Length: 302
Image 1 (spheres, rainbow, N blue to C red):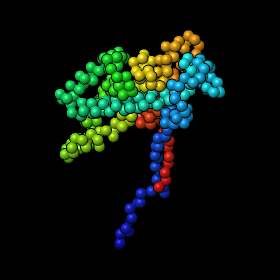
Image 2 (cartoon, rainbow, N blue to C red; image 1 turned 180 degrees about the vertical axis):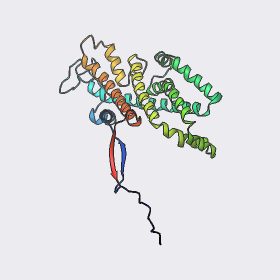
Image 3 (cartoon, rainbow, N blue to C red; image 1 turned 180 degrees about the horizontal axis):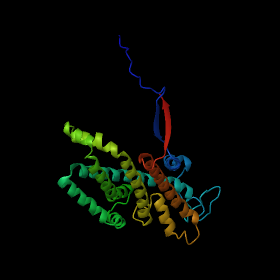
Image 4 (spheres, rainbow, N blue to C red; image 1 turned 30 degrees about the horizontal axis):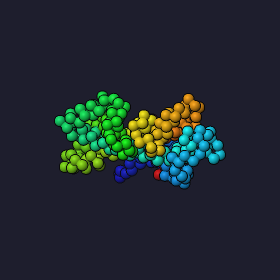
C-alpha cells in the first residue's frame, strides 16, 4: 500500500509585514531658536541696508526717546540707538561664533588626544585641563585683557578661546574613554586601521552631538564674556558692539537719568541671541538623546 505523502505544514505568513520607523523631528524650541538666530544673522549681514550710515555719527538731538525718526531713541551724544544695535550685531556675533568655534576646536583636540592615547599623555593633558578649570574664569579674562597692549576684536577672541575650552575638553575626554573600548573601535585596531582613521571615522562621528552641544554653549559663553569685557572697558570701546553700548550707557548714567532706550535694547539683544542658542541646544539634546527625544512613528507596509 502506497504511503500517502504528507506535505509539511506551511508557516502562515502575514500578507503584509508592518515595520515601524521612528523619525526625529524638530521641536518648537528648535524652530524658535533657529528663527531668533537667523534674525540676528540677517541683521548682522545686511546692517548697511537695514540701518545705513555710520553708527557713531552724532547727527541727532541727544537723549531723545523713541520716535519715528529714531525707533530706539538717541544717546547722550546724539547717536541713533537702533543703528548701533544693528551694527553692533556684527561684532558681537563675530566674537561669539569665532571664539566659540576656536574654543571648541581646542577642546576637541585636547579631549580626543587625552582620551584616545591614555597613559602619560592623558595624565599630562588631564592636569592641564584641571588647571584651567580651577582658575577663576572672569579674573583670568580680566588679567589677560588688561596686560594685552592691543584692544581689538582679535585679542578678545584669542583670550576667550584660551580660557573657554577646558569644560568641553573634560567632557569629550570622558566620552572618548568610553568609546575607545567599544567593539567596533577594537575591531578597527585589530585589522590595522591607522589611528587617524579610527578617530575621524569611528570615534568622532559618534560624538557629533556632544561636539555641537559644546559649540553652542561655547558661543553663549563667548557672547556673555565679550559683552562683560566691553562693559568693563577692557575691549575696544570705540568699536560698536552690544557690550560697548552698555559701557557708554553706564558711563553716561543712562539708568539714573531714565534713558531706558539706551541700555535695554542691547541687553535684550544679548538675551535673545543667547536664548536662541540655548533653545537650539536643548532641542538637539531631545533629538539625539533617546530618553528625551519625542519621536514620530511611521508605519510602512511591505
